[in-house]
Length: 404
Image 1 (cartoon, helix red, strand yellow):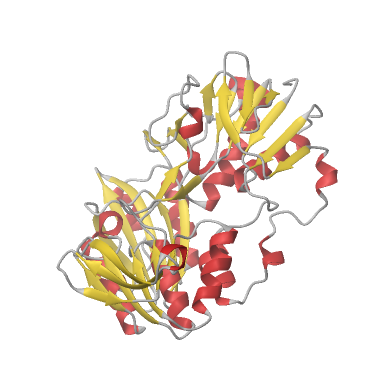
Image 2 (cartoon, helix red, strand yellow; image 1 turned 90 degrees about the horizontal axis):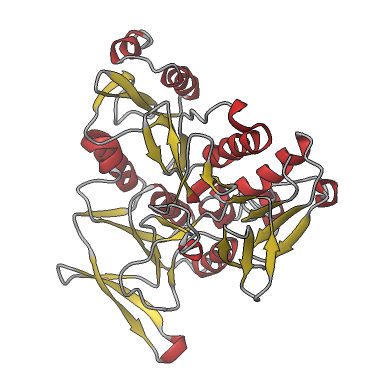
C-alpha cells in the first residue's frame, strides 16, 4: 500500500480513482485536487440536457453519497502548477507543495481554440459547467447560432440549439462531418440528417475571422467571416474543434508528454505517477497502439486499471480497453465501439446509412476495428464483445443478423 496518494483533477476519472482506492482497502492519506470550484460533475449532459434545460445542475453530480465517507482532503479551486517527481511533490499555484507516495493525474483536457481567437461576447467554447451556464443564457434569446466543427460536440450543441428554436449554421473544414473517423458514406449521412432537421451545413470551409459590434470588453459578436470572404451572421458562435490535454503544468517533470501523458498498459507513467482519462495516452495491448481517448468509459475503466496496479503492482491485469462512445444528436442516438478510421472498409449489417436505425461495422487489416449504430444498442454490445476478443473481419461479417 502507498503511504499517501494525491489525485490531481476532480474529474470523473479522479473521483472514481478515489472511490476505488477506498473500496479496495487503501486507508492512508488521500488528497483530491480540483481546479474548478465545483464538486465533480458529469460533462456529457453539458452539450445536451443541461443546455436544453431538461437537466438541473444537481443532476450532474457524479457522487450522491456524502464525500465525508471517502475520508479525503478535498481541495476545490486549487490549481496544480508543477510536479517534482524526484522529490515526489505536487507544486501548487499558491507556492505550497503536497508530498505523495503515489500520484494519479486526471487533469483532463480543455477545448481547442481557433488561432488568434478573440474574446467576444457571444463567442464560446464548451468544456466546463461555467461554459454551459454562459452558453445556456446566451441561447435563451433564440439568437442566430454558428457552430464551428461538425464533430460530436459541435453536432450536439447544434442539435440542442435547433431544438430551442435557433437558426443554426454548422461549419466543417472537411468534406463531411466526422469523415476522418467514419468515412464518406456515414459522414454524408450524418450531414444530411443535420440538414433535415433544419440546420445549414457548410463543408470545406474555414474561419478567417469574426465581426463584432461595440467597443472594449462589451464587443458583441455579429458574424463569422469565412476564408471565401462570405459572412455568416450570428450573435452566438460555439467553437467545437476538439480538445487539448492539460499537460503544460507537467513540463520538466520527467514524464513523457506526447499528446497527453504517455503511460504503459497499466496507466503507469513512471515515478509513482499514473494518468487516467482524457489526459492519458496509454498503451492498449488489444489494439497494439498508444491511444488518448476522450470517452466517459475510458475515464472510469482507466481509473480502475491505475488503482489496481497501484495496489497490486504487475499482478494487476493490463488495461486492454475497447473504446466506447455515444452521441445524442438530431433525433438519433449514435453508439459505437472500437477505433474507426475513415479509410476502413465499412459494411452495414443492419439498415443503411440514411435509415432511422442502422448498424455498420468497420474492418482493417483483416480484423474488426469498430462498430457504429443508430438506435440499435444490442448490436453494439454484440460487436463490442467481438472487438474484445480480437475478432477477424470474416467473423464479424458472419455474426451479422439476417436482413429482412
